[in-house]
Length: 458
Ligand SMILES: *[C@@H]1O[C@H](CO)[C@@H](O)[C@H](O)[C@H]1NC(C)=O
Ligand SMILES: *[C@@H]1O[C@H](CO)[C@@H](O)[C@H](O)[C@H]1NC(C)=O
Ligand SMILES: *[C@@H]1O[C@H](CO)[C@@H](O)[C@H](O)[C@H]1NC(C)=O
Ligand SMILES: *[C@@H]1O[C@H](CO)[C@@H](O)[C@H](O)[C@H]1NC(C)=O
Ligand SMILES: *[C@@H]1O[C@H](CO)[C@@H](O)[C@H](O)[C@H]1NC(C)=O
Ligand SMILES: *[C@@H]1O[C@H](CO)[C@@H](O)[C@H](O)[C@H]1NC(C)=O
Ligand SMILES: *[C@@H]1O[C@H](CO)[C@@H](O)[C@H](O)[C@H]1NC(C)=O
Ligand SMILES: *[C@@H]1O[C@H](CO)[C@@H](O)[C@H](O)[C@H]1NC(C)=O
Image 1: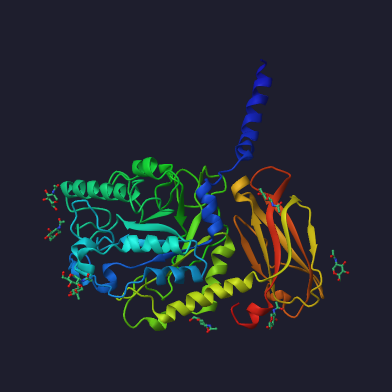
Image 2: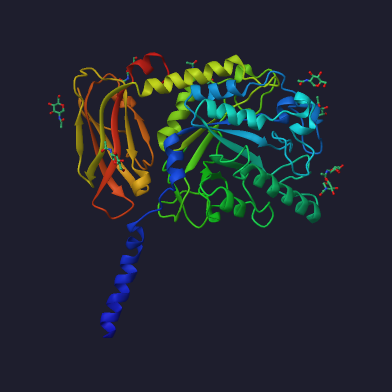
């Protein structure tokens, strides 16, 4: 080969390489695709802190303090169902270290050590049975960051010997839960609060690989090879755009070209800002418009939403919260009630506007445009798009260019449409992550929000 020809080849490789890398992007596992489609999950904070709101590190509250005399996990799951949660995560082990199932491991701080139900209670089993009854998947929260009973804080036990004892016990407990013949088997998801520190924390990754291949792990290291999701970084259910689903090099920030698929989740509380029940906090229950606003900044931006439930020391959710969950569920229902137009699997060419006329409705003033990518099939591809409205006052641009879509973006009709009637919407893909000339979009829909607006949910 001539030197000049060689140089040409080298330059071609250098020039083309950055683009050819993006001929494909990270795609979700089957369970991650399901996770995105679920859109909403429930977390249930119920453990020793429910009975002692001031307990802290260095203080082990007696197991007998755990005494939920009216416990109804059915009521919890009905509440979760009322706002559309598809799975529920229960705090089987939270900071106190108290376990909600009667573990057979060498560990004497669990429901088995408590006089509640004469030492025969099993919150985890009640919970799983209620989940099955209401068609909601069960999931577990487990903290390896803190365990006040075992003197673990910031992922560390007081000595290396104590760390070894702690790690072995946690590994046994997780095997006990995930074992295929266990009553607790097949959780949809496992949530390690504050994550797992490799080299220090219990070595749970191989356990998941052998016993729970399809699990979703919240906060497992991205490099673990376990399908997971990453925390969005705040507890207000607000995803900042752009929202990318992939991460690079095991990191936690979204990156369109990242090699691992790790969509974000947006968690939030029902009582501002408490995870566990506390006396005198009923006045902190969020109203429906706040919850809808959080829905729009999470699910509406392609982020998965997790809303908390906090049963009281009787083991029941209070009426104020039940009311808010139900109202939230009904309000979400209203956002999708009046479908005006919908198109599935439309193929859009880059840079070419596609217009959808709004039929029949002559005075559509309040509404939304919902767009979805087919992430399961293609991964996340859209990085810029433009939305415009044909109105009674001519064409109006959406105030800013759209960036990412991912599973779903919800665009409420913007302020600039105030007082105008919308006749048509136009949608144009400006830029994709890949060099493809076109893309098949999973869905473009327009909804009438007149009723939701009249009820002041928006
Ligand atoms: C709750 O925990 C605090 C400190 O951790 C302790 O002082 C208090 O006595 C506990 N209350 C109950 C009812 O156990
Ligand atoms: C159980 O744990 C205790 C310490 O918490 C330890 O002293 C005991 O040897 C352990 N028993 C077994 C059978 O490992
Ligand atoms: C607990 O056991 C006592 C004595 O055996 C019995 O009287 C009581 O009814 C039991 N309580 C429950 C909740 O099973
Ligand atoms: C935790 O620390 C306390 C106070 O130092 C000690 O009494 C207790 O035995 C420790 N617990 C464990 C499980 O090591
Ligand atoms: C809902 O709560 C928020 C925050 O407390 C408040 O600003 C808003 O006015 C409330 N909305 C309604 C409709 O009550
Ligand atoms: C859209 O495409 C998906 C495949 O990604 C397919 O499962 C679905 O049935 C299609 N929907 C319609 C309405 O064509
Ligand atoms: C925009 O709306 C006007 C008024 O209905 C209509 O005449 C025109 O054809 C529309 N344009 C497009 C591109 O839909
Ligand atoms: C939505 O409806 C309200 C009245 O319910 C009205 O004040 C507002 O202007 C409408 N929004 C738009 C974008 O036209």
